Image (cartoon, rainbow, N blue to C red; front, side, top):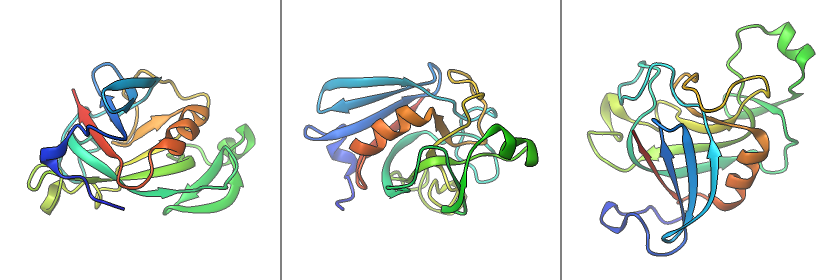
Amino acid sequence: MRTPRLDDLPPARGHWLEIDTTAQRLVVWREREPLADYPVSTGAAGTGQREGSGQTPLGWHYVRAAIGAGEPPGAVFRGRRPTGEVFSPALAAGHPGRDWILTRILWLCGLEPGHNRGGDVDSQRRYIYLHGTPPDQPMGEARSHGCIRLRDADLLAVFALAVPGTPVWLHD
C-alpha cells in the first residue's frame, strides 16, 4: 500500500472517493471521471475533527484498512471483527440501540497533520469507517455517530474498488 501525498490529490491515476456531507452523497471517481454515486449517512452531530464529538471529520483521508472480505452481506462487526452473526430484524430486536456495523469496513486515516491526523483530531484513532447499516436506516440524512454509513450493496461496490491506499476526500 502506498500512502497518498497531499500534493498529489486528487489523483491523476486510479480510483478515489469523494464524500459530500451536505449532499449526503459518495462519488467514486476514476481519475477525473465519476463512476458511481451513492447516498450515505454521516454524523448526526455534523462535521468536525475532535475525538468524542460524534462528528464526521473533513479533509483528505485514505483507506488504511479494508476489513471483511468474504463475509456475507449483513455480517455483524464488533471491534472490527466479525461476530459470526448476520443482521436480521430478530437480532435487532434483541439488541435495541446498538450502532450496527455491517458487511464491510473501510477504515480511514487522515492525511492532514493537526486537522485530521494526530492528537485529538486523528480520524484513525477515532475509528472513522465507511460501513454498512441496517436496511431500515435512512440514507441521505445525517444519522451516524461520525462514520459514513452505506447500504450493503453500495458498500460492496465501493469496497471492490477502494483498496487500502485509496484517497478519500470528505467535505461539506
